[in-house]
Image 1 (tube, rainbow, N blue to C red):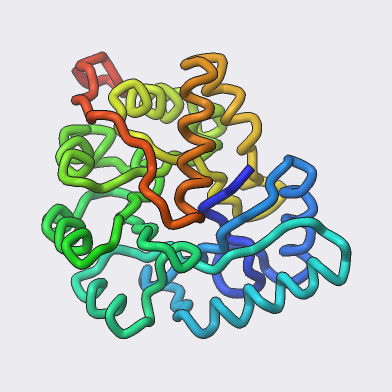
Image 2 (tube, rainbow, N blue to C red; image 1 turned 60 degrees about the vertical axis):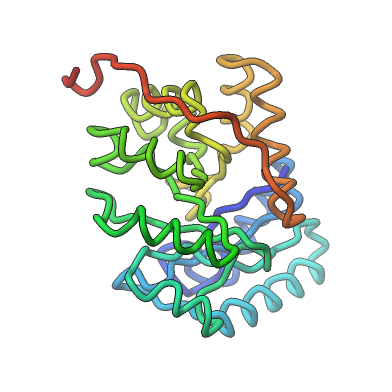
Length: 254
């Protein structure tokens, strides 16, 4: 399996606190069947700054340590970039990174809203040859209340990544229900762990894939797994025509 969103690099954000924590996460990943993981430390979110040189250096250091210890996991460099007005300039300067040196860039919204400029910025990124992936939209307050916002972004070419723990229900029944709605509406393209540690924010990627298989069938399982493989090759991913989320009573709303 391939995991495209993780906080495994040691000592840089709210993920692995030190190298031994990163090693424990790597061991858990290998046990789960993950062979390749993209390290995506938070960048420019108001708390953490992890520019390209630092990420590349730490990823190399971690890979060397994993090889020394005989842990079969390949760590690729990336960032989880908080959306901001100068994002395209950061890409041009080489400070903002794509995922594993591909055209795909993992973009995080604030947890409570979608910035008004997001649609234009994500479109402009595509014009410059990048493909934006919106991280964990199923946990964004505004998107939960107004899923039309996400529909419009995906319709204009953005992709999305659900968190494994959302799909499995570990973030609550409502988030799981909304995740399923996004899958049904073709508004989800990847599932990733967003792992932060081995205790409270573990991988659960295998469990999430099994949940998808039971709920949506083997074809849906292959869809998500193959998209992760397509991503690290830098190739076009599979996407179906997006649909609007069906009107259902959700979180007390109609």
